Amino acid sequence: MKVLVVGANGQVGKHLVKFIQETDGMEAKAMIRKEEQASYFKELGAETVLVDLEDDTNTIAEAYKGVDAVVFTAGSGPNTGPDKTVMIDLDGAVKTIEAAKQKGIDRYVMISSFDTTREAIQGAPSSFAPYVVAKHYADDWLRRTDLDYTIIHPGMLTNDEGSGNVKASETVERGEISREDVARVILATLEDDSTIGKEFQVVGGEQSVKDAIASLT
Image (cartoon, rainbow, N blue to C red):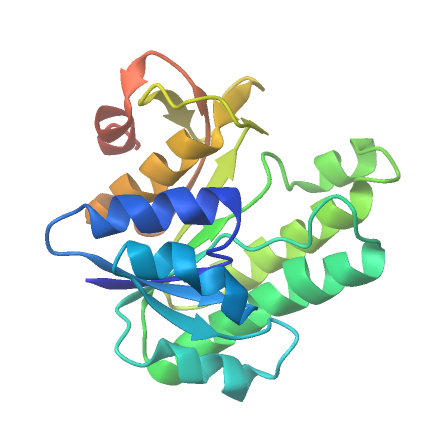
C-alpha cells in the first residue's frame, strides 16, 4: 500500500511517514510545500511531491499517481488567521477529497479536531471557532462521499514521547494524546479495514493502539 501523507512536514505527518516506511508492505509518499522540507523524507527512503493546498484540485490530483490511500494531516496552524483556516483546513481538505474521487482512490483517512459537532462550534472560544467550523464542514463533506473513509478525532496534542497506549471510542472524555501516538493510530487504522466508514475520538489510555482500533464498534 502506498500512502499519500498530506501535510507530511507537520509533526504528526513526520512520525507517520517514518512509521509507514518501517512497516512491511507499506510505503509513504510525502506531500510537502517546499523543496527544503524534502531531506527528512528522502533519508527515510520516502518519495516526496511538491504541492500547495491552495492549488486547484487538478494540480493536487497530480500528486496521487501510484497512490492507494490518502491521509489528511495538514493544518493552517495556530499562528494564522481565519482566512488561512478556511483555505487549508476546509477548502484544502475538500480539494484532496475531490482529487481522491477524481483519481479513483477510495481509502481516505481524515485527521480532524476532537469535537466538530454544532455544539462544539457554539461552545468554542472566538479565536478557535473558525477552526472548528472548518473541520465540521470538511468532515461532513467526506461523510457524504462514497469513499472508504475514516475520521479520527484526537484529543489535545502534545509533543511527549508516545506510550503506544490509547483510549478510542465514538466518544471519550477529553484528554491529551501525543502526536507520535496519533501517528500510530493512523497507521493502525490504515492496516484495519474494519475502520472504514467509522469515526472516533482518541486520547491517551491503557490499551495498545492495535487493540484499541480493533475494538471499535
